[in-house]
Length: 270
Image (tube, rainbow, N blue to C red; front, side, top):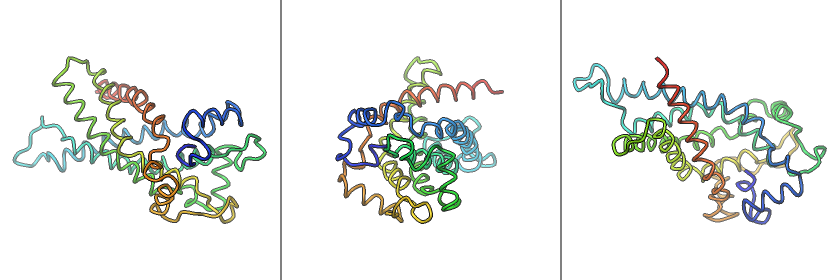
C-alpha cells in the first residue's frame, strides 16, 4: 500500500519501506490497517466465492447450456470464458463489501505519524465515523468504481483457474487438492499480472483527501483517469507496477491454500 501511494523519493523499494517504517514508527506500524481486512476478508471471501458459484450455475443453465436447448448436454462443463464471466459478476458483487473495507484500510496504512496523537484516525471505527459524519455513504464508499474495475479482472483469475485445472487433471496424476493448490496459486498470479496497475490507481483514489468537513486536505482526483494520469506523471509506466513484487510473491501461497479449502468444502457438500 505505501509503495503504491508514494514515489521513490520516500521509499526506494520494499526493503526500504519496511526498514523506514520500523525505524520511525516501530514494528507495530507494519500492522497498521490490519483490523479491517482481518474482519472484512471473511465476509468478502464468503460473498465472492458464494456468488461465484451461483453465477457459474446461472450462466451454465441459462446461457451456455440451457436445459431446453436441442443440443443440451448435462455433462458439458461451463467453458473457461464462462468461468471468467462469472468471475466478473462475482467481482462486482463483492465490491460492495470490499470497497469500504479497503478504503478504511488504505487510510489507516498511510498515516505516517509515529505518535498516535499525530494521527488523524485512532482506528477503524474512528475512521469510518469521521468519514461518515463528513461525507456520508458516498465518503465511506469512495473508490467503489475503481474497486469494481479492479475486480473485473477476476475474469482472468477464474478463466485461467479453469484452464489450469483441466490441463492438470488431463495431463498429470495430481490429486484433486493438489490440482486446486497449483491451479489456485498460478491463476492468482495471472490475476495480479493483469490487474495490478488498476489496483495502484485504486489505492491512489482511496488515499486521496476527501476534503470538506473532514479537513484532511484538498481533493485531487475527481475521476479514475485523473488518478491514473497522476501515477504516470509521478513514475511513468513503471509507476503502475510500484510495489508489485511483494504482492506477487504473496499471491501464490495465500490463494492456493484458499482454493484448496474452498474446493474441499464444495466436494464435501451433498
